[in-house]
Image (cartoon, rainbow, N blue to C red; front, side, top):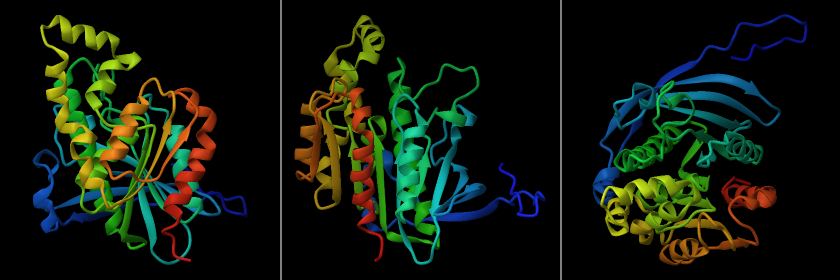
Length: 319
């Protein structure tokens, strides 16, 4: 925890963490949420520990229990960082998700730029990332254990839903203006969550797409897992059937009518343009911006993509 240094040169006492209780109150629309992502009414405790302050926002570490319990205790606590804009009034809010490679700096930068523009941003670490990964264990969000990877995807969506409820409980947040955004893996989870959660009306999906089975099957990092799958006597069709319930494309028609933005690469080798177009088409053809880049070379367009994303969500900030 960061100490606060006074102008006189004295060190003040460390800020006391905020401890409280938030509530998830499902509406009648919850009955239409796919069962694996459905959440019951619940109250859940949280801790909000101040980390630092800037001229335009504060940052706090946030912790609360996941609504999904796994065999790994560390993974059952959700860890997030809350970038809260300074100033009065109620702000729109966004849950920010990270890439598969766990480069948290990208998501923190996006969250900070959102907060600069008056948008509250909660950067959330997905299952088995950061503090949620058991020390020395082999557990990963995506691994050769496909069934556990599917559970991790389900848990990630439910965690984002609970995070959105936590934001909606905040007095400084406008509960009618909750969104979600992410890059690559984070973009896929964002699209899936926005599709199934009736309370999330906004979404910006960067380097994301549908047909998740094809994405996972063809991605360079998946060669070893694909070989193990085939050696077990199972086929790609078996894999597609297993993955379909957590594929954004399965529920993309539910995105129609929500306020969306997509950013994609014309030669993306991980999320093929065909996958981005499939999600875009099924979601009602929302605004989409194509950059002349691949998945990894997209880093050269990161800053303009962030600016577009920030402008998209900042349109909700009261003038």
